[in-house]
Amino acid sequence: MVSALTARRVAAVLLTATHGACTTRTVSPSHEVTAVGSSTGEVQSVVRLALTLDAAGDRRADTLYASEAVVVSNARVRLTAPRFAGITSDSGGRVLITATNATVEGRWAWALVDYRWVNQAERRGEVGRATFVCERRGDSWKIVHAHSSQPLPWEP
Image (cartoon, rainbow, N blue to C red):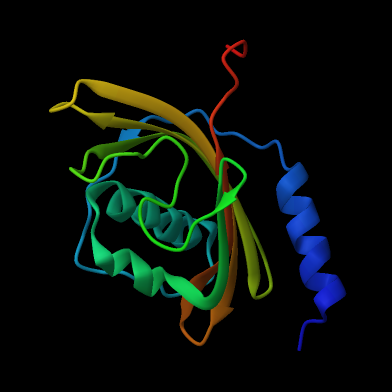
């Protein structure tokens, strides 16, 4: 069993992570809402799916989170969709992942994702960055913490 101190250390590492991979990709929701296995690709699939389903207002996103998960968006705890910074519309939209990086250590994983939310109907677009802490529970990964924010106006 992982102690609370270890969990806090994992969260601290996540919050200070500055990893970034230069990739661009459009993510489309699938019917699968869990990832099985322990590779970084599987963790990345979970976080991409969480963002994609959240942007679409799809309630299946709820199944990706542990019951005790904490989600913070622009310094506010979020209990329901939209959970992530910049995703503000009830009418949906889509998320484009612009950079992602994940690390797996045993049954813990953390990921950093840069994304852009676009709602063509409203002619709106927003950028954000999210960090995730995931825990392997059984055969799937569950999100136990997510934190997202938008860049300040003076940041490039």
